[in-house]
Length: 65
Image (cartoon, rainbow, N blue to C red; front, side, top):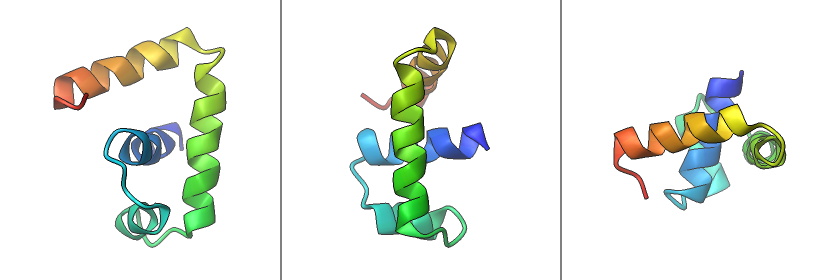
């Protein structure tokens, strides 16, 4: 579940995709599901340094700034 949520978070925050488009690409998910996932990861990043390091590594490897 977390990897999918991270993908949704990155698509929204780094690629600036719409919630509907992200949902469509991630298996026809509803935009509210995407919104919940983005919020959940955003909230988790406040307290989870390992998740922050993982996301930074993913964005660096993918060349996303």
